[in-house]
Length: 229
Image (cartoon, rainbow, N blue to C red):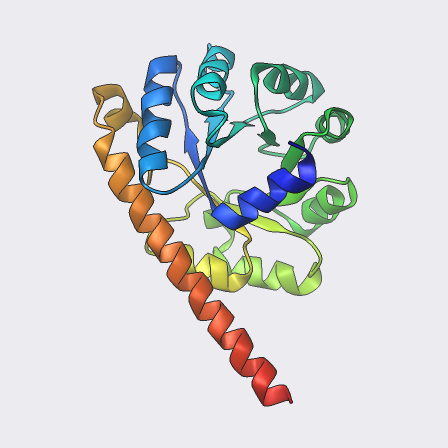
């Protein structure tokens, strides 16, 4: 699957649950629970030790039914290793020109981390498929994203860091194409305890909130178009 198709699927799903574990079986079970909740994309952090094995196991188990990505990738070598392990998209915490070049070379979608206007501008100009605004909570969240969208209307933003069930709709209204969700869907304690059913419940709730927010935005746009005629 190429970059354009991958980005399209991420935009359609709208939610990117992130898993952080060093145990492959934990990630496989967690992803299955998330899929049962209606979300067909998952990101595996490459920060913990043994994370490549986790990514590989997840890609083999769920790669035909879910988009499996690698998060916390910081350089070109990390992109190459993640892609070889089965990652269909790459997420970085900050900007790396080397990572963007390697992703383009391998035709793997990459969502580059940025926070300030300067970082967003650099990331946008680099050829990254989208900018992961991270961590959102550090900059007053949705209001900050809305301000950036006004300055960079062509940039595709993924909101991450402090996005919750309570505020996710605000990020959609502010212009995010997707949301990165960590422990609010798959927390480390529940994962380690094998309590994966809670991931299904949380995934359903986020999916429902996302659908409602998008439906509301579509209705607002329809009204505005009608009034403009």
